[in-house]
Length: 223
Image 1 (cartoon, rainbow, N blue to C red):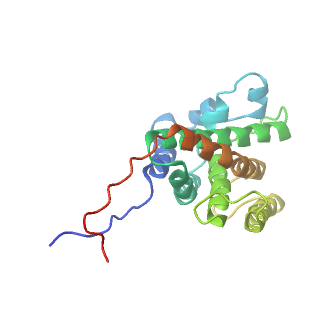
Image 2 (spheres, rainbow, N blue to C red):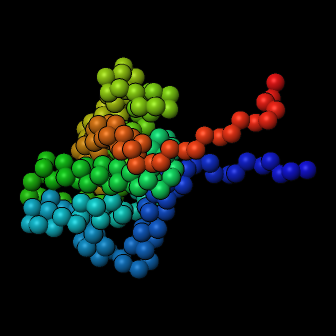
Image 3 (cartoon, rainbow, N blue to C red):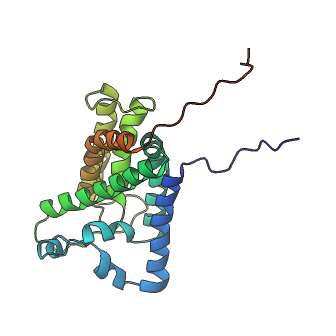
């Protein structure tokens, strides 16, 4: 008898790759680099204004603790899966997916710098990029697998909920399970970037990916 067992993990491979890109570097940070990783790869508005722009992206791979890293990995898996399927699982679609993720994270950090000009705050973590994925997933879930328009009532409602959650974190000054301050500004900026960039990214993925060859019709169609 043939083995018809389902695979344990059904998540698309680009989303699983993001999980590795979050947990792998954090393991390297803990066991090899130590605390020096924060200053070397973290993002600071003051350093950015002084010309250190590398931190816009490198900070996405540095985290403040295992809880922080695992929460972002879980978010990347949950919300990155629908986005990865939308962009396509071929190399071209995956490339757009990864570029979209990095762009949302960089824009989130950039917005944080603009809101905190010249400050020595050190920002680490993939949260801004993950919230970009949440922005895409919001439109995909509202559109039942396709991108719903930005003005769709379900998109507006879910967007208000995500933004409201981060504003509540801003009022409380912390988030359960996380140590230190939470960069809620970067979360909101990443979410908005994800909402607006999902459309152009999906269009680019369709343009880059070759069309699949049509499947031949079966000789005896099932009744």
